Amino acid sequence: MAARSIASMTLSFGLVSVPVKVYTATESKSGVGFNLMHKDCGTRLRQQYVCPHDGKVVERADMVKGYEFEKEKYVIFEKSELEALEASASHTIDIVSFVPTEAIDPIYLDKPYYLAPDKRGGKPYRLLQEAMKDSGTCAVARWTWKGKQHMVQVRAGNDGLILQTLLYADEVRSQADIGIEETDIQPTELQLAEQLIEQYRVDNYDAAAYKDEEKERILAEIDKKIAGNKITAAPAIEQPGAQVIDLVEALRASLKKKPAAAQQPTTAPRAARKTARAAAPSPEQAEVTPAPKRRSVRRAATEDQPAPARKTGTKR
Image (cartoon, rainbow, N blue to C red; front, side, top):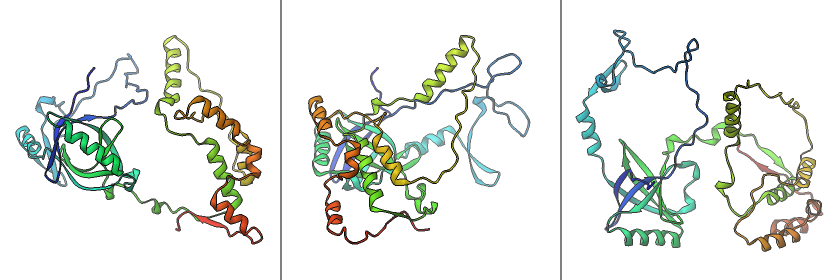
């Protein structure tokens, strides 16, 4: 089924205008949903809107929208007035600046959309895509949509332009408010942790390699229920209490374990990956043979002196 656009817009910067169509880029694959039923007869319940003033059920045809401007005081809007508010919105995506692609913290990224060229927009569309790709930049723009002005990022994807709405600063909480304590990190611990990261490292992220295993488990249990079986809880796994562990020994033990769920690299040819694995040191060798990093060389030059502890985290 061909994708349907949700809007026609004009992407503009300077005197350049690019007619584009907007498409949703994601769809919700929610978890398993359960309906509310009447316990006595097994009938699915219906949701109704009841007016608390007269206790009557209100049909949809008798509903209007209102805005609460004071406590329990509303101004009512007719359908034509709501349509007028929507009609006054701009149909332009106005680019205000270009920034390095990595300059936008991913925590501000919200909902993504695809942009496709509209009639007579093919050449300027591709020109903008290639220019941003070559320069390593993305556009920051304003987009008014459904009664709200969004700040958006427009970036070059592999197949076209991607628009992604951005959260405003007051919509993102500061991590400093959590109060993460400072911790002393020893050089040996840091070295082992970096080796463990390298052991689990892959070339890219393949979204198709992962699935919602919890959803599949629940659906399998539902199938058993449909077949007439009773669902029983699995035996609880006893969790060990809090223990004081040797972090260095835990890291070394982790290095000896083969990553079970590590995603396999897909960018290198199979023969090249096989050769690379054969040349890679074993976990035991990795413990005594650190990777040739500039930082390790600097430490080796000062090994006669005690290495200072490294601090990480945020002050309270």
